[in-house]
Length: 262
Image (cartoon, rainbow, N blue to C red):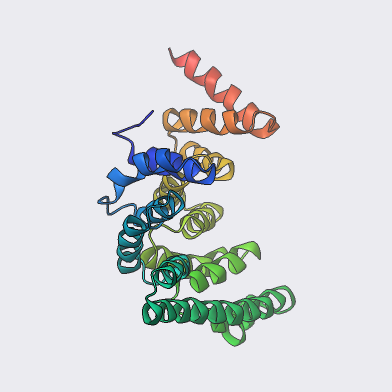
């Protein structure tokens, strides 16, 4: 069933339909969302659905729009290259394959720098590791590398250092769940709860069934004194993982507190 007033839910459900090979259902849910500026990846997934449904002309239109919206997305260039190749447009296919291969090489280099940064963060003072090693991971034009750097920082407890690369990554790629989640996580651990709320809310809209994000979002609402907002989020998290003892205990406490106020 469509949720016309909840585009984020339809986006998620459409992607699930695509993953389960129900291409007609995916197209029905995703096609009305292409004009939503908050969902810039829709054109990619809609193009994939059309391609799999045997509608290459419509797939090509969607993927070309996806390339204009997200020129840094390697999946777009790879799938465009395949379509161009099938259509006999060799020059266009070669251009898209080169863009994809260039991205792959940049990612290989980034992963290599990432391993060096990870080792440095474990063996050197953070300030020294950041200055001498980890700076090589960052590329101000590449949200993937900025996200990688932010993740390396917060995984090693350098939450303050994680914030700026993750903020920049989210700015460059507003549909990056990893960037928004990591930014919210870092701000939460710094006890900057009010600042953590918007990125965690954005992450939960991008991935409405991510247990870790929902649990963290509920904790953040609780930390700012908004248990009324925390309760439905925690209910959803509990439905996703009813065996998690911590979430179950928190949910029972909030339910009891809410009932006592009635």
